[in-house]
Length: 183
Figure 1 (cartoon, rainbow, N blue to C red):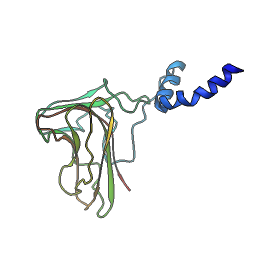
Figure 2: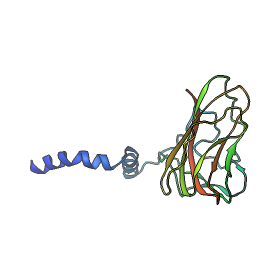
Figure 3: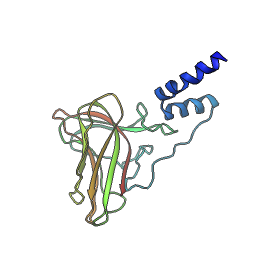
Figure 4: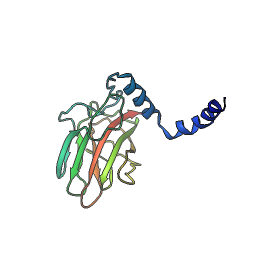
C-alpha cells in the first residue's frame, strides 16, 4: 500500500516533466505502431508541415541551404520533416508567394511558424506589402523550438510570407508548422 501511495504522490511530478507529445510518442513506440503524419490544414500556406519536398518554400535573398530535413521536427505525431535554412546575410530566408488565396479586404489574419534557430535571429516579413505583418515576434535564443507570430489585415491583393533573419551575418535555422489563418 505504501508503494501505491508513493507512486500516486509522485505521478503529478512525472507528468509535469513530460509533455503530452513525449508521452504519446512513447506509447505509440512501445506499441510498435507507425503513426501517420497529419499535416496542418485550414491555412493559406502550402506545405505548412514541410512533409512535401517541393518548391513551395523558395529562397529569398542569399540562401546557401534550403532543404527538407529529418534532423529536426517540431510536430512529432508521425510527421518527420522540417526545412533547414542557412543564410549568409541579413534579410535572407525562405518565402512562399503567392499564398493559396489572397487575404480578404478588412479581415485580420494570424501568422505562426515554429523555428529552431541554430544561429541568428529569425522573424516574419511580408512579401508584397499588401498585408503588412505587424507585431512580428523574433526568436529569442538558439537550440530549441520557438513559436514566432505576427498578424496582418488583408486588402484583397495577393500576398506571401517570408521567414527571414534579422542578423547581419545571416542565420541557420529550421522551420516547421506554419499557419496563416483568419481570426
